[in-house]
Amino acid sequence: MSRNQDNLIVALDVGSAWTRVLAVEQMDGALRYRGHGVAASDGMRKGMIAELAPAAKAIEAAIKNAEFTTGVNITECVVGVGGPHIFGLNNSGSVELGGRMREISHEDVRNAFAQARAIAWPSDRKVVHLLRQQFKLDSFEGICDPVGMVGKKLEVNLHISTCSGSALQSTVTCANRAGLEVTEAILETVAAAEATLTADERELGVCLLDIGCHSTDLIVFSEGGVVHTASIPIGGQHFTNDLAIGLELPIAQAEKLKIMHGHAVVTDVPQDDEIEITTPRPRILRRRAIAEILEPRACELLHYVKESLRAAGVESEGLVEKALGGGCVLTGGGALLPGMLYNAESSLRVQPRFGLPVRLSHLPAELVHPDFAVAVGMILYAQRTQANRTEESNTIRSKWRSIFAGNF
Image 1 (tube, one colour):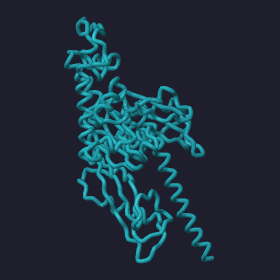
Image 2 (cartoon, helix red, strand yellow):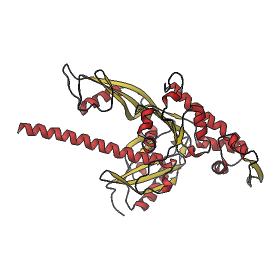
Image 3 (tube, one colour):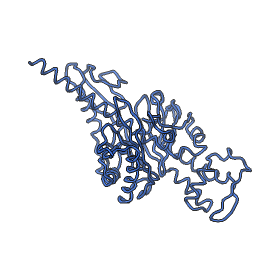
Image 4 (tube, rainbow, N blue to C red):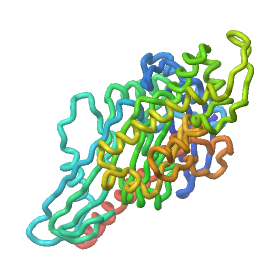
């Protein structure tokens, strides 16, 4: 086994149900699948790490599986951040460039970002991303990249996404105990968007719902930029629990029943469809009885999504659908419940679709699945940020070379 992971980007997605590791090789700007590992999560409660030791063992198991398939000793990774502790808001910042017009530099952009992020957060909040919406240079709005342009005043509108500092540190600690160094934390909805959304959808306005085990995280784009991030404390496990209680079944059997026979639209299930179960006691169940339990939970989830969009001002003339010309994209394991697309369309009044991750070179077909949207997206996001840092570093070096060339 190789001693290092040169040219590899490794994503660690610690979910409530499963811990996933994806390793991708980067060569000449291209990405090629090398391997992955999956292990059942442990030590989790309500979407957050509650016990460090079992959570670290789950990460270690997933890493070992990935190392076996890649033949590489994995020592560092990027991690995903999501769950009910996510909070985001919009803010702006500006810098005066002096009395005379001059060229905008990367340093000017950084200063504008620093002004926008200068918010007195509670001590436990950690800024995960400063997500650019647009720049304004003097009186000109809608600028995507002002570097190299000329003006007197630069303004930037940002969406600032934050998480619980203790929740993030717990993930980092578990990764460290599993022998990994964490190089970057990425908001899971940002990652899922990277893997599933098109540029046109972001420009027209789109809402992405990542339906996980214990929560549904959402992100909204408008005119290419992020305008809203939030988390709804309802996920796939709540659907399962409803079945377990309503049908008096063990959790494991309720989960199996949901996957095999569940539907979130009662009228789509034929009235005479029946199934037989043998435990805890033999009986015949109508499939509609299952849908009658699942549909109200699906409607509740979409109701809270719509309320979150309205509270954030993601609407036009009181209609959410006018702000979402690109529709709604559902990803994550919970999105696969039949009828969820119909409920999304009925509630939000926009065109919905499933969010499948882009297929990287050599990526196995079974990984082109909503469950792996976050992991694939983290790889894409990490590659892009690395490329941006390299480009900026090369620009700075070239300017220094030109200065010295002019002096000697």
